[in-house]
Image 1 (cartoon, rainbow, N blue to C red):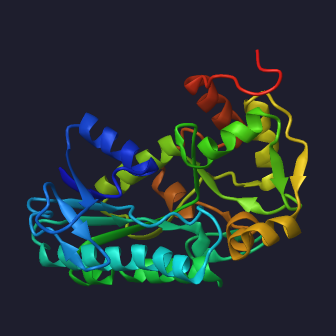
Image 2 (cartoon, rainbow, N blue to C red):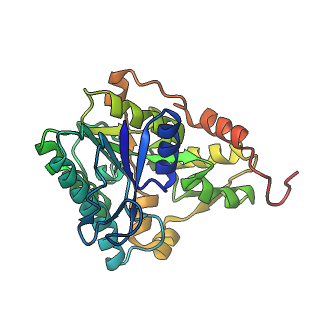
Amino acid sequence: MRILIAGASGFLGTALSRRAEADGHTVVRLRRGAPGAAGTTWDPRAGVLDPAALAGVEAIINLAGESIAGGRWSAARKRRIHDSRCRGTDLLARAAAAQRDTVRVLINASAVGIYGDRGDAVLTEADATGTGFLAEVGVAWEAATTPASAAGIRVVLPRFGILLDPSGGMLRQLHTPFRWGLGARLGDGTQWMSWLALEDAVNLVFQALDDATLAGPLNAVSPEPVQNAEFTAALGAALGRPAPWCAPAPILRLALGEMAEELLLASQRCAPARLIATGFAFIHPSLGPALATMYDRSSPAPHGPGAP
């Protein structure tokens, strides 16, 4: 296939692009730039997309959006987080609708933050969305795909949990503090974390490309979510370092404000009900073995006190 990827230079986008090209597909990487610049460009804020971007494209994967984890959420930053997702998605969905004769599927990233803070409740795709900033963004983000689905294009909305791989994302950020013995649970550590190994995320996206029965929301998470205290202990064990500390919730709220409440302390215990129904085979269903495999494979250089 000829696959257009928005966000191809990111953590998941890089892995998807590599896999697609290894499988013999042609990848069109959509990058930000002024109209007329070299390459295939777009400017979601201005509503501009290179007319040549979708030529011959059969599938679109949209992963674009400003990071939600880069510091406190000012009003301006919240607008950028929202607009970078919703405007870009609307632009791609409308472009896909105009190319409905060739574009067969739009896979548009979403996130488990759409469920809000739900405590111990087990959440499937049949459950209602929640409240809060991330939930509001998620609802608007998914709704922005409507022009494509209205045109008869199959739209898949993988609601990603925390993607795990030492090459990037959260594990890359946590590597140094944990190797220095500074790993800490967040708050009381009882909040649920829905996660997914990067390898499984890539396989999931390619199943969604191929399986014509898949459409709509899809919880892109492992079947075994964990509480934050368990995650902290498992990562410390995988790196051979104890993680006995606690980052108190009041301190996190003071330092990071709303971001701490929704991103670090909120609880989403999601189940991949629709994936399981398709027979999807998880390579890494359990956190402890997944981390052990990842770090054995990546063999990170030792750092910190007591490193051999």
